[in-house]
Image (cartoon, rainbow, N blue to C red):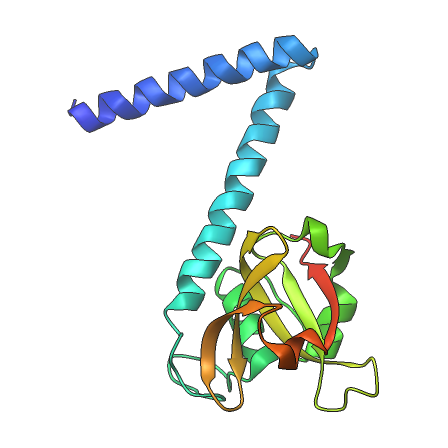
Amino acid sequence: MSMRMYLQIFLLCMSISYISLYAQEIQIPLDTAIHASVQIETAHSFTDSLIAYGKTYVGLPYKTRNRAPWQLDCSGYVAMLYAHFGVILPRSSHAMAQATQPIDIADAKPGDLIFFKGRDIGTNRVGHVAVIIAVSGTSLTMMHSTVHQGIIIETYPDAYYYTIRFVKIGRVVL
């Protein structure tokens, strides 16, 4: 057996020991604690993978079909990222906004979607979507497909264009 294998077994045993102690402390069954731990790790791994995959498209032009099954406008880009991991989202930003669970901006986390009004700021109709990839206080780093710059990463609320168009944060329920 390799040293790496020994290390993996050791870490697994330590994790189970920690979960067992935690389960006793909060008085829940061990199998419930292990299940919750696996769900949290799976969700974290999914988000990390989604963001890493999305970053491979940064720099490509708006509506590109490069390595994509459809044009990558803002909603096409987000839908393609999630579809790559087996999660089917609607193909319009407006429909995506309706299909997500509303989240307070203070509770936003990587993997959530941030929705904006489109070109007509006189309406509250969603016309743009981005994926949140990092949160630091009230600053949200987002990855999205834009008409003039293609697929980019930028920070909200630094970009005035998006600050005045903010509608909501939505969480994709997996």
